[in-house]
Picture 1 (cartoon, helix red, strand yellow):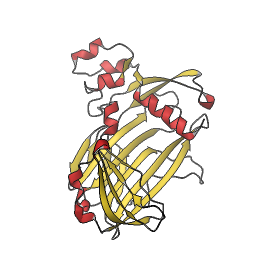
Picture 2 (tube, rainbow, N blue to C red):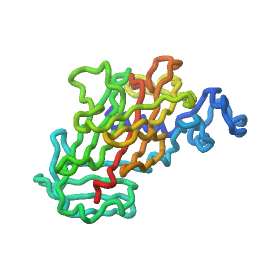
Picture 3 (cartoon, rainbow, N blue to C red):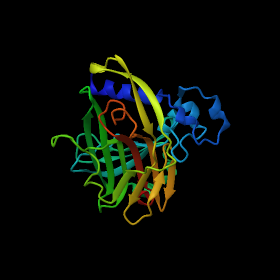
Picture 4 (cartoon, rainbow, N blue to C red):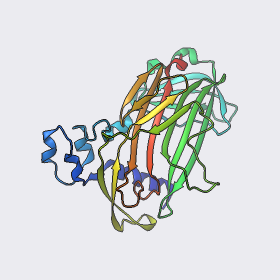
Length: 287
């Protein structure tokens, strides 16, 4: 099975997971939990705030923010901004310009407010960084992970986005690792395990070569992320939440972690203990 197919299948699973843990009814202030059967769609119960400070994300929350299509490299591509495109039908803001390549370089900010991107950016030089890697699962398939970083030429951080971030211990030295990264030494991101993070159980089908041969169960929590930028106060951001603090905007999605009670200690069949996506924008650096 190709990498793209595997990733598509994994996202599909995330959107349609079913909870099967009676702990959903534990320590709950919502009377509606009594009416929830032993297996219910996560998105349907999310509105009731399951997990206290660690609510599960709904499908729509996947679309709140993203930083995509960064024409960068590990060493960095310097782009002189010539224009800032705004695709209203897709709600995308795209700084674009010359970068010494045959095609122009660009970076896509999806679902960010257009007013954040000042015309004063035009004519400035920014450096685009991008690292893409993969990690395997117990069936020797692969899932993607990546890091995208934008800086002004003087080094000022503009934005950073990491997707498919997992614990990288136990990997081969030749694996392409993305986080933590020397490209962004001033940023630290960790899952914050809190007592109020109630566990939930999901069931899914998986097997060798992408065949859905057997039923698997995971016992997970959905912890928020604690994000610290040097010189700024740490912020705690829940799944699907956008937080503005001290000139920065933070967004977190898809933060999940296997519990000690999980049978194999992995999130799905990834061979990884946890997974999350995060996006940070220095709004002051966009002026």
